[in-house]
Image 1 (tube, rainbow, N blue to C red):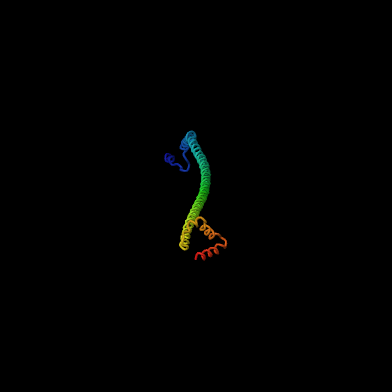
Image 2 (tube, rainbow, N blue to C red; image 1 turned 120 degrees about the vertical axis):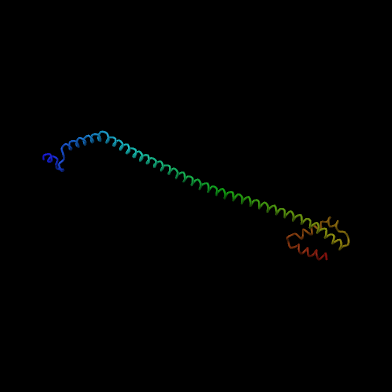
Length: 188
């Protein structure tokens, strides 16, 4: 029975041999973990922390560089907009200047054409007046010659009668009408 008594063991109380073997195995496991595994894990952890911190620093540096480039880009964009506005304003001013120049040239050209036209009209008028005077003088002398019955052309030319008569008609004073009427009455 003893054999049976020995075999019956209280399950709550551990067997001391198993506790010793478990303690030795636990100690050996702790030694291996502390000597080899934990330092390697700590090294990997530190490496990972360093990589993450380096990545964060690189990301912060990249962000700062991106911010600097963005500011530079915005400054260049503002400069370009200012330059474009200046170019637009200069172009508008140039266009206004060109427009004024073209208008001035047009006015000068139109004034020149009008002056040339007036001069041409004045010359044409003077030519017509000369021709009419000559023709009127000739016709007057011919008419007077028919009325009188003899040729008065040489006498009229010599005395300048026709020219005097026409000059009296053109004079602005009131005598022209009276002399013209008198001459016309005498011719009848």
